[in-house]
Length: 195
Image (cartoon, rainbow, N blue to C red; front, side):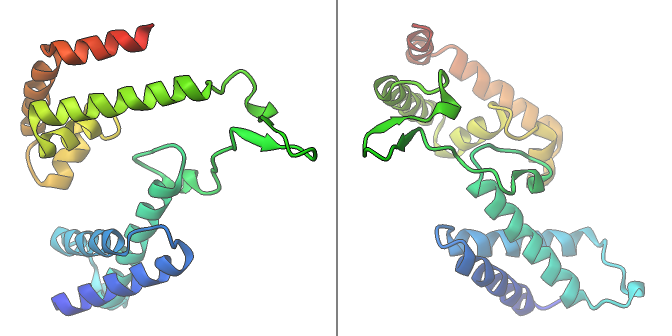
């Protein structure tokens, strides 16, 4: 199958979603579609006996890949599977403005909303943790740590996506984990969150 068709499918799929999802990165959507099509083609699961051309099969693969990316990027929660569960989920406003023009805490979130100060503190702490992890293990391994070690992705999923044995993922996870566990700065940041 021509790489041109794969690139055209990716550009078309990304363009269709870009019109509806103005906030999404066109390049990210296009890359996701290209990757999904190449993986689908390399798996060899296409069956010509169904009477559907390979180009149509790859088109649907591209569309599903972009749809999955958009669902995951737009939802206030994350999931690794069944991104259809994310459709229609929206963030609730923390504050609502009444008829008198005064902003008040959203009653639906009563008791669950942290003060602006504590939210800012938590955000600052998260930023410092991220920076420290990057400093300790590097940018690439930090992304791995944030995905696998926070249980957003299972090691087996990472191994399948990267085309490496699961043991390699577990080894890397153990190495990074040991580095992070021994770091005093991260420990102090964790203790700060306890207060």
